[in-house]
Image 1 (cartoon, rainbow, N blue to C red):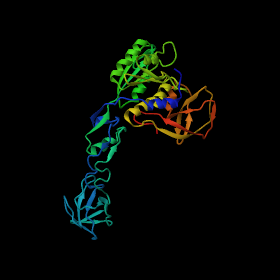
Image 2: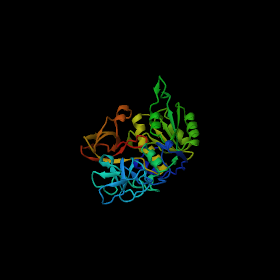
Image 3: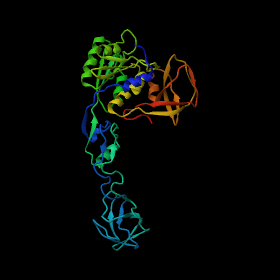
Amino acid sequence: MPLIKYEAVENIIEGLKLQPIKTKNVDVLSSLNMIVAEDVLSQNDIPEHNIAAQDGFAVNVYEGQSYEIVNDATELKKGQASYVMTGVKVPEGANSIVRIEEAKIIENRLYPAREPKLWKDIEKAGEDIKKGEILLKKGSFVSPYHIPLFIASGVNSVKVFELCVAIVSIGDELVPYDYDGGVRDSVAPMIMSLLPFAEKRYQLIKDDLEKIKQTILDVSKDCDLIFTVGGSSVGKKDYTKRAISEVGELLYEGVQTNVIKRGGLGIVNGKPVMALPGRVVSAAVVFNAEGLHIISRMIGSELRKYVEVELGEDIEVKHSMNSTFLFKISGNTVYPLRWGTGLYSELAKADAFGYLERNKEHKKGDRITVQLLWKGTSCTA
């Protein structure tokens, strides 16, 4: 099967008939870093009542110069005041706050240092969020900053996607990532770390065609998406794509673009099987470019993010095909990092990647579009 153009890959993924992903309701704290499966709506106003934004005296503004202090009042008439603390409900009729540092008390009367302004230092009911307002759209991630928002708005549980992803590393030379001795599996942990919202099933197997076939079949029964790592090239023991084709359908073997050219895609038991190269930069870019595209289709929300930037220096592409480059972003300018498929240090520095046309000198200042690298629940800003 020949390598295909990247545009064809995009079309293939867009045309996939994907099985629905299960959803589940979880409590608010358990929803952190999950993807919401429906719009999250506020169950009440925030704040629910008019509240004081400063310590001081709630007053019912009138034209007089002093106010009668009414302790623990639930309602204020014109010319009355009652002491309140920040964040508490103000009495009915209160329409301004005289801050404590601006309040002079003589006997039982309040003398403001300046004339109170209507609604100063009062947060009105629903000023922040209205009941029924969308707090977070379907397909979005729950961040730590959504947790207090959900709690304050009366949301007790959130419906999230229950996505199961299998990561299968393949290679006679590999040992588990937490073992000493041998070549430790470093790529699968990266992929797992990029999927905090999913249940992960990890396996490490040898370069054995029948074992690869059986493993893919087994995990495809329970998981929604499978990533294989390694065995995707054209060596004697690179069995991954052959295994996919023998137990399912191989949709494409690779792409006519350097670095990502050995990433392939198949379907087994109706589940996408993404074959990632074993080299760390190649695996990361294929995951970002193609794996994220598949997940975006599954959840109905685009996770990939692109920006238009300027090249910070000249780049001459001398390779025989279009090539992928890692970039470091500074403002609106990108600078290419060292080129290679296995450069761990460069991947750790990178903010984005992009494709440059072969046999061409790209000039400093040229405008190009790059894809931001996915960080697990967001892209690099």
